[in-house]
Length: 105
Image (cartoon, rainbow, N blue to C red; front, top):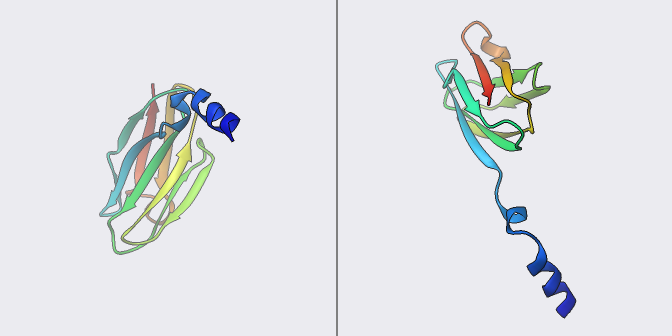
C-alpha cells in the first residue's frame, strides 16, 4: 500500500492538469468568434455552445471532426496536438453563414 502512495506522489503534477478549454458559440447560425486562436502542439478541448433553437453540426475536413450540437446545448470536441496553421470549420446545417477558422500558433 505504501508503494502505491509513493508512486502517486512521484507522478509529475502536470499529469493532473486539465487540458486548455476554448469556447466557440453558435448564435444566429454563425460561429462566434469566427476566428479562434489556440496553441500549437498541445491537446485542448473546444466547447461548442449552440445557443440557437435548432441543431447545428460542427464540421471540419482539415481537423477530421464532425459533431452534431443539439439546440441549446454544449458539446466538447477534443483536438490536438496540432501543427501551426489555419484549420477551417463550418456548420453543415447552415453552411452559408456558419463559417470559421481555427488559427493554431
